[in-house]
Length: 134
Image (tube, rainbow, N blue to C red; front, side, top):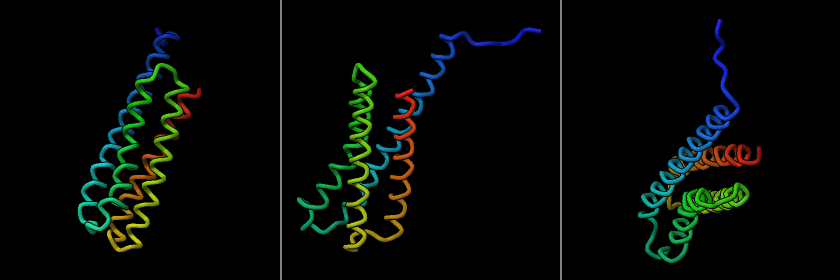
């Protein structure tokens, strides 16, 4: 009976492909989060154009930007640092969405949808960071 065993290089390649797939998924979700933030913030009062609207858009777009920038770095340690920055930007965005909800710029339902997406992205970032440290 033949047993299908992967060589060490094949196992490493599979591990790297899984990591790349996870990277792309987290980037896609982060990009969608940014698009959702831009859409929802269109309805903010014009008095917030240079305040909360600008801050929220910048922090949300920082998440996928840092994922991509980190991916382009030469060393895992650098990539990991950019993923931590992306997590920080995600937390910043989450608070700004909470503030927008309390200011009645967005509904509780809209906030919960984006909060759920934030949580999912945060978990994926943490998983990716852990895989890079292994």
